[in-house]
Length: 127
Image (cartoon, rainbow, N blue to C red; front, side, top):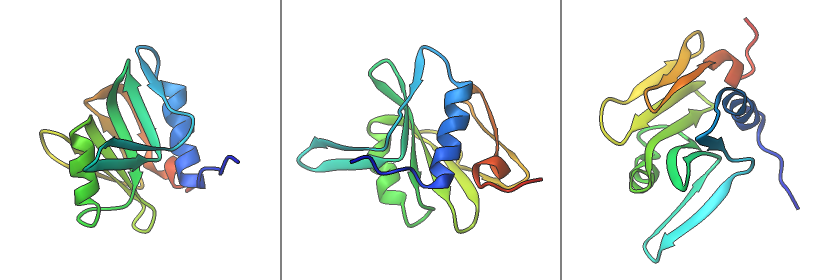
């Protein structure tokens, strides 16, 4: 049985899929990983470059999801946190500054330089 993505995840997945091309690939489903006996992590969306995780998307916010971000930083260069309550996207690179994108701004990432996504589109807000 396939469980449909929440609308916010479906919209972001569609935006990423429409803008990302090889050598990157966008997952079509959410995934749970068990890396070893001490590390497991779930993502809503993953962008891979070959076998490596370039970026993963997880629902939540900082600081509550800090542990999840730290686990993912072992395997992915960048974590995006989708905060449906505040309608913001946290972009948390393994190294460098955390950025918070709000409705009215364009989501961008140095890890995915060809991607530019209107935050309002992710949260289904019509301008």
